[in-house]
Amino acid sequence: MKNRTTVERKSERELVVTRVFDAPARIVFEAWTRPDLFKRWWGLKSQGMYLLSCEMDVRTGGGYRLVFNQGMEFFGRYIEVTPPSRLVWTNEEGGDGGPVTTVTFEEKDGKTLLVMHELYPSKEALDTAGTGAADGMGELFGELDELLVTLGAREGRA
Amino acid sequence: MHLSIYRILNHMVQYANARLDASFAALADVTRRGVLEQLGRAEASITDLAEKFNMTLTGMKKHVAVLEQAGLVITQKVGRVRTCQVGPHQLEEVTAWLEKYRQLWSARFDELDRVIEDLKQSEKFAGRKKTESEPKP
Image (cartoon, rainbow over all chains, first blue to last red):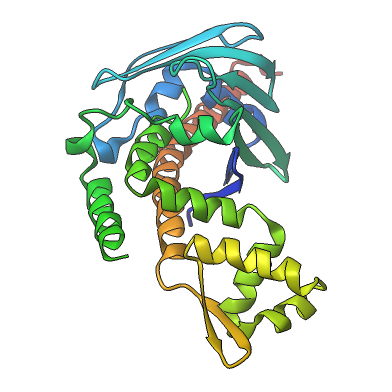
């Protein structure tokens, strides 16, 4: 049986994603910090997205850069690397005001609870994070487009 | 490297941004979430709610106003009593956004499961090899 992913918007500035993995923390941590492994799962197959390249200098102060097949780039630097329990990185592709991502790996009975926490410097930063970044994404995200239509229709009705 | 997904969802959210903003803001308060949960079970007057949450009438009126503005709650005045109930669509919008986000992460983590399984297997294999290569007595 698959483990459940949960998502919660904790506050105006925070998002938290959790998931349990059936492996010790050191293995889960490895999959997050070895570029060859990271590349295998960070893409979004169902959306036709995969990583063209993945550079990760996983140590405090080290940088990373991810390039997706359709050209989107993501980069920043690690501000804390504590194997196998904690990773903290910045997200700088959007300029100042990017969020800080903290991932913790908590092992219990051979399983690992993963908690991914994103903190934006302000509510406004969170709200505007997507501005302009998703141009031309429509085709790839047909499903989201459908949802937009639904939301738009509701907007119209109200 | 965070959420390419998140940015894309944000783009999507901009269509309904103002209203979602109001919804999220309204939900970022423990009392208001409690009120919403309460109203999910049964409609109630502002007086009922104030009593249940140990608040002044004025305080509860303010909370309800925020929820109403976000469209999460609708109120109706009958005689001297203002009755509150959960709004029809707004919560669904917030939930749909988070659910979409959750699904994308869920898919990503299912891939991660596969990578982890491979790692476990290769560790087991390496362990076995090591044992085998040890000199036999």
